[in-house]
Image (tube, rainbow, N blue to C red; front, side):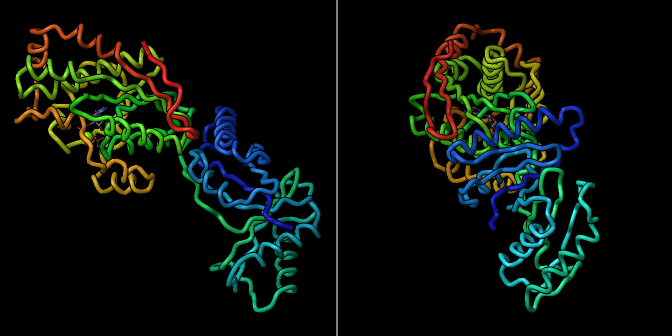
Length: 399
Ligand code: ATP
Ligand code: MG
């Protein structure tokens, strides 16, 4: 007898009505992709639950992977037995004996298969008695047990579990469409990407890079951040935009106090053109209300004017510390704090307008033709696909 399955509970997905089937299929696909290095593992879906058949693989590394897959509320190691009373008794006893320092236990039987001859309550008593008779110094405590042994009698088999591990929650990546993440090397944007993925969004990323003011290492840092994000989903394609010439032109031709606003508008314009080409329907940023000059209400209003795309801003209401806590949890913090230059920190106006006006910015922009330089930046985009396993691969030029 051994734990040979992992039982997966869907959580919020179960509320998705008619879409439930496609959500479950997507979760199954995502799990299969993440577990492809375990050749004997099988992922099976049923209406209410998903099961991973371990087929001899050690459970711990597989559990660790599953805990990063969105769409899972909780998971448990499980023993699968036939719907046979003696087998169920044996498995329940095995589960109890696997626990350490257990003094009090509780039985929780759920009979989903009404064809099974004993009801849930009756089974609680039968199994509880069996465990008491076959152990010493262990008692039943339904209020504060050290271990709750759950038994699910389903149509095809019975599953016995004894611990509930938290899943990552959220929705399976790929069930909410695609978004283009504006990924800097900072703390915020990778966290924003993670939170968008948690809602089922599949990401591509765009990074504005200004060589020689920003180095190869600064670019590598962004690719490393994108790689971390692939832990939680599929590959992330990163579009690297050569931004130097456009930035220089902005800072040369536009009033200093409006340069940052105009630079941000250029970022959105270029990001939108990538979305159009890649058939992506939204942008995601790490913007947060009130942190810096570009993130006042007036500033967002003026910058946002250049695009009709919905902008997902998962961090909008968070305190910095909350964002930092998430970045630690997902492993991006240590990469984000590496001290490499960012295009926005190199070109910093002395006194950026914190309340830039739309009419003024349009007036300034109309006095100079940036279109050729914008097109040049778009033409120079380098596209790098970051896959969960092999890191950087599949170089291809986009335009
Ligand atoms: P972050 O920590 O993500 O860098 P921030 O607090 O530094 O954010 P800003 O510099 O105002 O804030 O940037 C706001 C958002 O604009 C970022 O979260 C990111 O989504 C986007 N952004 C900024 N710089 C770049 C860049 N070089 N390439 C791509 N996106 C960028
Ligand atoms: Mg930044």
